[in-house]
Image (cartoon, rainbow, N blue to C red; front, top):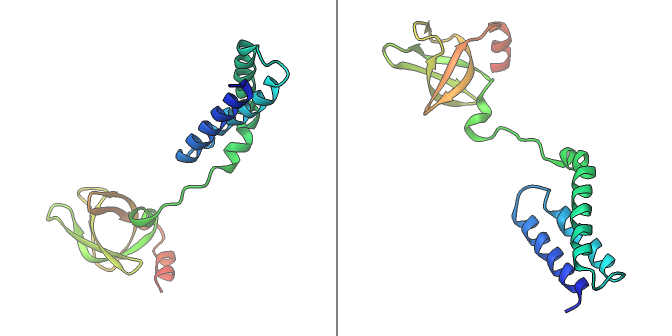
Length: 154
């Protein structure tokens, strides 16, 4: 079996593995294998030289394309439950951690809530900022600028 054919098979394997993964890294080993297949046409019996050529080409491709591949990565966007973190909400039921009470309304949904400061009591009608999610409850703190929160809710 000719060396160029083996390198094309290797390139195909790397391409399939790249498709099966989420990164943009393995493809360069496949590209290097295609280049090595072309190189092997000029040195058909020098298998060790071909392997060294493939290794060097792979490293160079990874190094020189790193800036490009870093720019291609998609931005992550908070979805589902995590999309409410950082938003402002209105307290619908007084938040009292000691009594395990408290609810807020954000984006039309009602959530059970706890205050960030355990001793703090936040009255119904006040505006809060959602800090994080702990299990099925949101952790909130009083909004620093209630006027801004009121205009967002309307």
